[in-house]
Length: 431
Ligand code: HEM
Image (tube, rainbow, N blue to C red; front, top):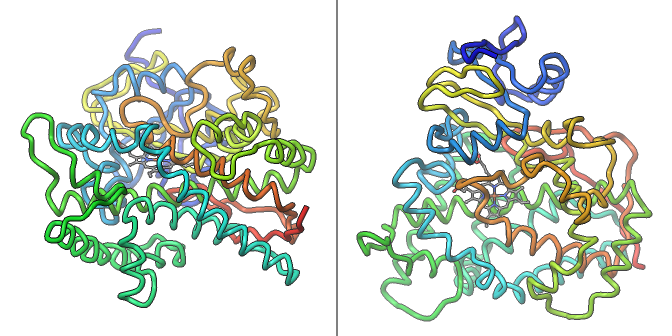
């Protein structure tokens, strides 16, 4: 095919990612136009490009990643996260990523095992109380609170308690309690930056030993200049980690409980694996050795990837799937669509954790599954996310069985994250 070929696409215009309808449109367009197509975007007055083939995704996110910035959608996210690692670009992003990477090393993550265990035990206690009272649990809000507590305690350590004490409540609670991600929330959230700034100042004036992400971020130095991060940089990174670290993980856990509620036989296999696990505080290695639980989480992330839409902007023109992509085009990748691509997944709508057994996974195209993205900008928190999700499933399935409290179908909310539109309520029984 000649490289100047223009990809097919619908006659009508549509802003992908701009509204709730995006997921339905992506499904429709994929059925009509396949792996590469273009859609006129009225908001920018140019064509957007959508790619669904793993080879093209590999090119954009990995082999030719230098030709792409984050592009569309980042302006909105920047209001919330400032110039943190999620939204920054170029040399500055590279510096931040290099400085932050060691804090997410497996050896470091492993040291959060007690914290992750404790927070899960606390929520198990809560679920036991619901069970005793015969009240359903709100899985959406409980997983949101749980993952928020893990990210806050891993960031601030003992300072979190101090802050709660001082202020009479956890000032970051708003993040889990207020689900709307509108401008009002952005304003409330950014004002928390002041608090983080004060915390940083206190630590600078009264240095004491801390083991948490904040202290690691304060200690890390730029390889070339030897400089630490400024207060502003620290604040943006802390706020970024709070949002990036908690919403996605909470959505993934909610979807997993939803799927388990529909598949009793798989829940039983999970329970059996949880019962076999011995350690009271799970190390990262022990958590990862629960291979069936791992497969269940992977399969849940396949069907409902919280990061359902990834966007990049081409700097120079590119060629994808034999079609030419003009300079400055926005290119969209939807893990949701990719994870259901019929050429790479059989019975794609079915929940089948065994797809992730070594034998099956090894035969699959390596880039057909990207819940944490791939390439240099892949999720920095993947290991800690998997760790806390494994420990959560294990802690809860050892003690409880969950069933949907109502039977109406779940509707999607596909904003920045993919999550169920209404709260997932489930009844809990002890095993
Ligand atoms: C199940 C949970 C999670 C999922 C599905 C997820 C997914 C993703 C995806 C798809 C990206 C790439 C976004 C893009 O390139 O546009 C990403 C980036 C990122 N994630 Fe996660 N994430 C999860 C948990 C976490 C956690 C726990 C943390 C931190 C504690 C975290 C921190 C980040 C950061 C900082 C980035 C930006 C990295 C960069 O641009 O260099 N994530 N995540």
